[in-house]
Image (cartoon, rainbow, N blue to C red):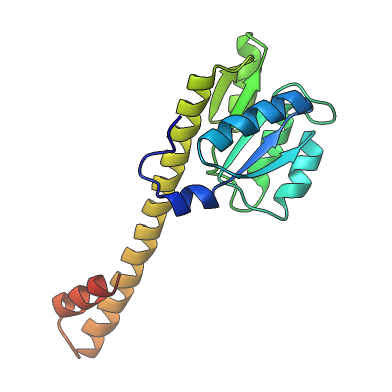
Length: 178
């Protein structure tokens, strides 16, 4: 198995994944697959309630949750997860034995990003996790660029108003510093 492309070793080592599953054997299996991807920082929860508490204290880059769990099922957990600050865009993979469309729709409506059927195919899991992590990284980079462009625009306006230097010169100086 290969680590996600476009991510250097330091980025992979800093990725944090939350596993939510009431089955210890499932959590061990998924942790092993994540380790093979190079992801060592894995947080585990045995149910949705415990996961929500953990997420109030720690940010993650990917959530992998079982659908059928005690206390909160996967859809209920995802709905609560999406209400937490800064959790709207974090990818969530739901693992389920259910084939019925209604379960998938319920989880998707709650905010699931992707699905895998249990038992999990190793190659499919690794591919989907890798793709979601790369997508999330690109979303973060894009958001950072938007913030940078807004800062540049504010600086350009301030400089133009003051007449101290040309806008193009200021833009070059700012871009060189990035």
